[in-house]
Amino acid sequence: MNVPALACVLMVISTVRAFQYAELARYIDSHQEEYVEALRDWVAIESDSSNVFRRPDLHRMMDVAAQKLRLMGGTVELVDIGEQELPNGQKLALPKVVTALFGSDPSKHTVCIYGHVDVQPAKLEDGWATEPYNLTDVNGNLYGRGASDNKAPVLAWIHAVGAYQALSLELPVNVKFVIEGMEETGSNGLDAMIVAQRDTFFSDVDYIIISDCGWLSRRPALTYGTRGNCYFFAEVEGPKQDLHSGVYGGTVIEPMTDLVGILDTLISPSGTILIPGIREAVAPLSDEEWRMYQDIQFDLDHYKTKIGVSELMYTNKVDLLAHMWRYPTVTIHGIEGAFSDPGTKTVIPAKVTAKFSIRQVPDMDPATVKKQVTDYLHSVFAKRKSPNKLKVTMVIGAKPWLADTQHPLYEAGKAAVKRVFDMDADLIREGGTIPIARTFQDVTGKSIIMMPIGGFDDGLHSQNEKMSRYNYIEGTKLFISYLNEVSQIKKTSV
Image (cartoon, rainbow, N blue to C red):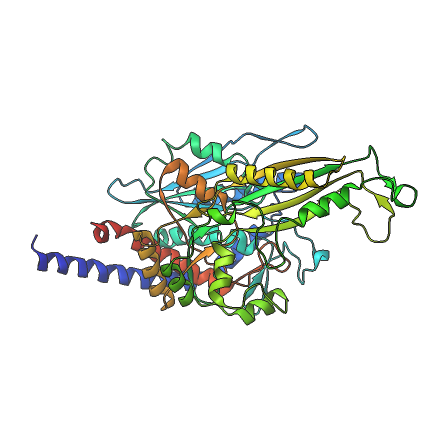
């Protein structure tokens, strides 16, 4: 075929696709109440993966998700991923992972969509303005635990596929789903399942899409990186039992004093990590990154107001975003064994355990960080010449993830955002950790994109979590558009 003829064919294809999008978008608009009710039904299931007493609800949640996909004609499996051993030695069945397949045309790309349907704990008395498991519409915001993280995005993807089916339109790509129920507590069993199915379920997957994150502002975003997480316990043990501070104070070297002393050496008041080797491992901010951050829509004053502080660590947008996304940080989370109840208690704790984490970035390796932290704390502790015992343990070593924003997946994402929202997408990174992204990358070798639809103010993991009706419905249109854009990657990348 000659070039003019090919251009004509591509133009016709483009016109047909544009028409299909308009038809699909109208269908989404006309069914939005149905989609809100679906979210209401899912939010009503208290699928808290951290509460073992809620495990039956979690199993039911997986069954509900599987049944929804079955009713759409998908090839659905509930994959057994084994048991979870509790601290008391009891074993509990893990919620099965739902996998589904729509389409198996070898001439098409195959995308795999990952999501989760478990949630963080929530109680009305925690400070919620509405019942957390009763989806409540207030001024266009749909409040409920799990609404944004991650039930609405999962449903939006399912509804996107369902819209094609309802209009008897052929899916432009083959679509696979992987939906789990333990993300909020570490995705127990999922890594092993991905490894086990690398050469079966994942063998024909071309691209992996994750929508378990949010926008940075009111501008839609595409996410291309996350920080990792090295989580530590530092335990200082002294007397054989707790002691009365009046009777024994001044006679023993107290474990809490030792612990606070070594914690103070981790990070300076200005935020500089003091552990040797950590800062040296970080790649410097490139000129290209600086320009990207400069173009991102982000308001420091609004950010301060949202989190309720009068001053931030940095006073300009680029520095703040860089330290939120691509520089490591140390956070001290708490001290186990210390008296923390209301009132007073004059006690010298016999053993205290600090819990702190280092959000790590590309060019940092968890095994190296573990050694750096352990060696450093032991050297600091040795200088105190304390008779107490120090034990340092790294309990999480999740790696960071970073994608190439020049990959056609991101070009397709930009085109989809432009079509649906009529604006350019921000390219952003996440300061938090989504370990499954790195697992998918390392095990399957597939290219990954994170395509969020959650708002910047959704309150993930917090009180009054919500998903705006606008983001939910327009996000469904975004996913519809994106499937079309991905189907064209072959033409644009040759």
